[in-house]
Image 1 (tube, rainbow, N blue to C red):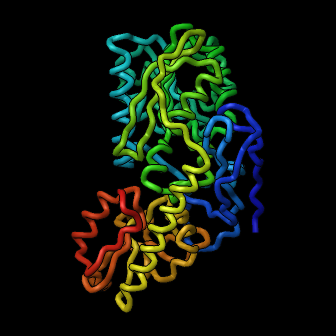
Image 2 (tube, rainbow, N blue to C red):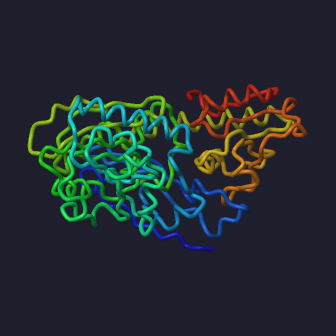
Image 3 (cartoon, one colour):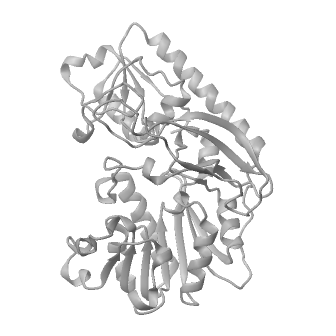
Amino acid sequence: MAKAMYRPQTECSCCGSANLEQAFAMPKFPQIGLYRDTPDDSKFPPVDQALMVCADCGHIQLHNNVDPSFLYDETFTHRTSNSASASASNTAFANYVKSLAGGRRFRRIIEIGCNDAFLLRQLIEIGDTATGIDPVWRGRESGFTEDLPPEMAGRVKCIGDFVENVDFDTQLGGKPDLIVSSFVFEHIRDPRSVLRRMFEIVDDDALFVIKVPGTDMLLDNCRFDQLSHQHYQQWTLDSFRRTIENAGGVYVAHSVLYRIWGAIMMAFRKGPGKSEAPSFRRADIDLVRERKAIFDAHLASARKAVQCARPRKVYGLGAAQNFPSLAYFMGGDVSFLECILDDNPARTGKYYPGFPVQTRQPRPDMDIENSAIMITGPDYGRVLMRRASELNPEQIILPFAAI
């Protein structure tokens, strides 16, 4: 079995304090987002994990930062254009950035973690040039603009590297004045250092707008199944603002995408200056533990509902990337599931490492109408409830009260 390397987080990523408290442990926590031909987990083993809370500033973060080589492989791929939820999220983000611009035109736009240029396509209209920065494009930069219309492709480029290594004056011809990033900073071990570096190399009037998953909604909906090794940081509005200010930035504005996992969109600029930030709720270890207890109670009720559904078959619905986390918190044994139903043909016949339950497309011979369905992709609960109604089982089991 492969050994997953990791580095313990000994200082708070928000304020630098060493006063981190363990909210709860997650021994042998599985990896998510991997769709394999067998349930063998020797290449992607579980890793001991814990959720920590800074006693000084309230920032929530993982204890062990697992090496990215053990978190991603060729099956952990994501293209914004191929995901309805990601497309909706980035369209809303682009509209928010445009509203903040208020008619301002930017000379040089950069996106940190540019994926497939979906966001830059929408932002190029407010800028002269746009550059995506992402190490996954290293050696393939010329392909970044292949699908762009000719009038756009000449103003868009890609740098296949980490943002810390980019020489903006040389590679862009000057300092950027709009910096955007969508669902990237939660993956960064030391976000303050990255922000400090960015403040040094951008234009004096540069505007930053960054989107991260919102942990405020995770806490309010009691959804700890959304935790993963990938997200080193669990940003609340309060801790994200504090991190920006601790790095030398000044808060400008924010908005929350409540329908998209409570995503936080926060705008800021580099200092000096006075922040007019509103007062946000500060998390603490008591709040985290209180919501974790409610989460555990929800899953206990779901397990009881599954027991009561017998002797009918129980199917899962939704082969979501975070299913291993849900299964883990349900006790790890999901053998009660006949299989996980999912309409995506790319996931048919696949397994999650460590969980011997196969993903299949619904078929008439499954006799679903005389069975029960448990929603196994609760992040997409609204869509999956409609699909479950179409499949018309005798019973639908929701693992959580809020979707």
